[in-house]
Length: 535
Ligand code: ADP
Ligand code: MG
Image (cartoon, rainbow, N blue to C red):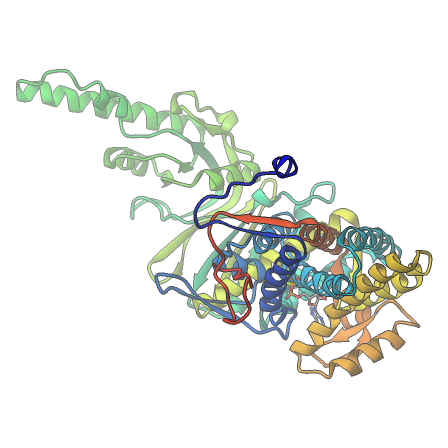
């Protein structure tokens, strides 16, 4: 009895379950592997798409790792850790999410084998961490400088993972040139990039320009719609005589009084519009509403006007044109006015107009109008461009790129196999396991291209003896020099993938007790306790 009372007492709520020790580890590995396997077939330019159907029947087709994970909303704790990893990779690097998730799956598959052979998880974790540190060193050694040409290749490589677009080369070049121009100290401010999507034309009509667009029409049809040498005012102020209306406790008893009230309102709006005229503005972008009367006066003054312009657009306009955003029209002066060579309204799709602001004083903003024949095409191209912006920005900031197509993975894996000799037996096994997990990345790329994976890995290992640039071009289905093939990646993104995938794998390996508030639904019928990552 005395002995019993020393044991920890765990009280679980009804319906909750607890899995401990090796079974917990196995379950977690299983959940992680399941998720990773879902993404594995989407990896690389030959990857397949997934069709996602949500609970209300909306269909989405994508091969973007994070999009897939986000939509599937797995509940299993280990699977959730992987979704978090993908989310972080997506938000901080904008690329490499699929690779990171596939790598976690492969690291855990290898760990599972060691674990079944009797190696304990802390030791595996330790070996993995040593391997990660070495891997990052090797990635540094084999990196090459991020020249303009290299960056264009990074953009192409990154975009090709998301679909095949006829004008890939032109887009990659335009995007890199624009990013190089927009960057300050090699850093790109993502708030200064606006991507809009319009379906109805082919992807070759996609526009990448250093300008600003506003997704509004000019408020009145008679207003000027094409202004050269624009003098631009940016307001966050309702031009609707709101103060008067709010103050409308004045009792109106006679028609005369009502007329007085209207006259006062008119007078006030007239004064406000006069402030705009006095400032020298011939174009006005207002974030707030404008009443009909306000529009009438602005029209009379010949000021091209858009209302309810989004705050983000106003900020990009401020940055690009040098205008100041003014909160009270009565404080507007000529000092607040920005400049652009040309402001005009253009129909971008049936009955849909944008206002284009071109030739801005400070062109440090990027306007991307993604075009495609269907929503699926525009969504894929948007993802591709976002991925490329992420990869190029990172490569630019660190001035380092790496060979893609599995070349860097093979170079690292070879270095790790050598490095492993420095460790004692058991840790050595873990480091070699890490090397094997990395080799699975080119294997997955090749597998998705329907290539013979044994041939590919043998060729890669021998080709890599001569140069760390040898990888697999899955478009041509051959092992080749990735620098010559133009398959390059951001080094910083790859380091982040290695780092994050190792951390998550190690974290998952270290869990040996899972207490779940509700019972896990088994999948696969006769395997008790198999976690369902989407339970
Ligand atoms: P992620 O979400 O990880 O970026 P992708 O589906 O975009 O996943 O695939 C990225 C991988 O595809 C990278 O390893 C990259 O080197 C590789 N890749 C891109 N183009 C090619 C190509 N032509 N041949 C082989 N691998 C390629
Ligand atoms: Mg990618």
